[in-house]
Amino acid sequence: MEKKRTDDSEPGPVPPLRLDRFGFLKQEPSPDGLTKGRSAFEYEREERRVRKWRKMIGVGGSDWKYYLRRKPHVVKRRIRKGIPDCLRGLVWQLISGSRDLLLMNPGVYEQLVIYETSASELDIIRDISRTFPSHVFFQQRHGPGQRSLYNVLKAYSVFDRDVGYVQGMGFLAGLLLLYMSEEDAFWLLVALLKGAVHAPMEGLYQVGLPLVQQYLFQFDQLVREQLPKLGEHFTQEMINPSMYASQWFITVFSYSFPFHLALRIWDVFLYEGVKIVFKVGLALLKYCHDDLVKLPFEKLIHALRNFPEDAMDPDTLLPMAYSIKVSRCLEELKQEYDKKNGKNIQPTEDEKPAE
Image (cartoon, rainbow, N blue to C red; front, side):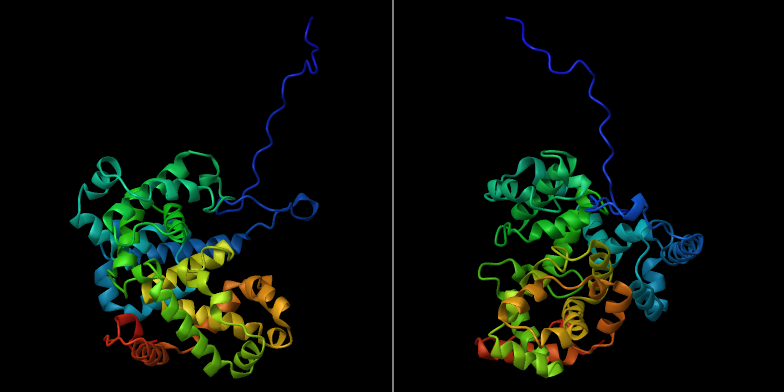
């Protein structure tokens, strides 16, 4: 019996994916099908910024260390304003110390990827599709993005078998891969977790998440000191930072925050260290303070995990964060936390007073 033909026509062209400027799928079409473009003035301003940055870092970063020694305050101010996107990958490598690690360890990454095996391989494969699933680079199953992410995470799990692999690491590696090669991303991950410039982050991913526990203790005390009314409300509603802030520290805001904001935070985080995570967290609570103090438990939890769009504007939130002083308090709170937990550890570079 002849099979019934349902459609003689050729399939039509697949409509192109609607992506934002960072490569993420757009959730909704803009009104009237129009996308808000950047004005000629904004393009010109961005070009001026790029020229300033190129002059500052030199070809391939050749002038970076010289400029940093001569004009550290200019570097800090420009980083806080945001690194131009076209230079972000290179500058991240320069400010994190990862470029030096790469140059000192030729061939090591290839050895880890090709010739070593990891006990975490199945866990990494299981989690790959959960990392930036709406980004075009990571969408294709077993595609180039997912393969690169797997390679970086596998290599790190072999490089540091004590830490191995923990799910939150995928967002760090994924973010880095959007701005640099596999090998560069791997060494930047090493620089962060092993502490090439700032305090090591590996405690965020070790068994029991010891550094997460310390940071949440410090953040809880900072909320009580700097936002006492909100801190009291949290106590009454039995809210603690582990209910809403753990991912802030584990993924440095790359998990659920708008990507353009996460990038600006990462610019500062790589240069100034983890204190920017505390500052941004406090700034968010401060910005939404008057609404948060009125909410009962369930609505409060929802609000703390879903901040309004206006609170996520980098040009509003980050200046507020920069104005918050935390370094001295962080050092004192770390000493208090260590004493409470029977430790006797000297303050790290990130916790020494210097805003």
